[in-house]
Image (cartoon, rainbow, N blue to C red; front, side, top):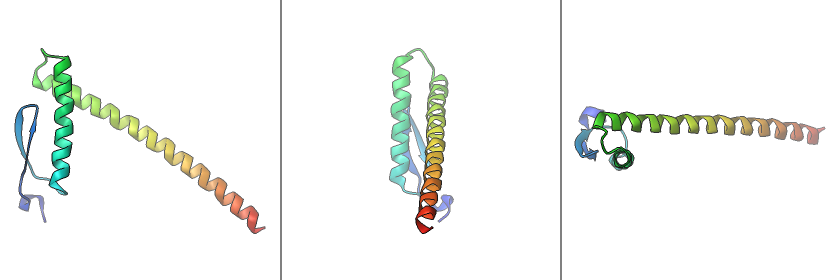
Length: 97
């Protein structure tokens, strides 16, 4: 089903209502929106004089930092798995000899 054919998912982020159409489970959209809302509200509590645009930008920076950290962690994990796979392959070759 195309996005246009999907019913909208209504969410509230930083006291603003949004109707979103997205592929996938609507509950996931609601959960992601809830996480974003919690993040932005926590930023707003620590910066009470900030306007919604500044809060949104700070939230984006926080999420981008988290993404970068996870990408680094994933790269390190992949490297470790590749190294261990190579070592295991070497051990298996030695057993075959």
